[in-house]
Image (cartoon, rainbow, N blue to C red):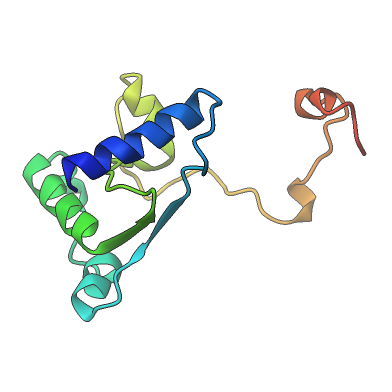
Length: 130
């Protein structure tokens, strides 16, 4: 990304973050580039990180660069990489040990797991609209 373009984009995001408006919102559009090589990079399995490679920073950075090159950035989008460790990412950031396992907590699905919280803080903020 060219530095002058980044400075323009950054200005829109800083104003938006501070509840200001510069004539348009910083609308983010990103999508896979429409060529076979980009499709293979983004949807193939060769970039998957295996457990033994989880801290191989050279491979992770190489993969991230390939992903960024295979992605179209439109609007006021810009290339950005987030090393996602899955659902335990926040625990990892706080210093907890990461454990790779085939066992995971059950996923709540279906209507039997839906429960109305009558004293929900979120609903209270909206004045109980329902």
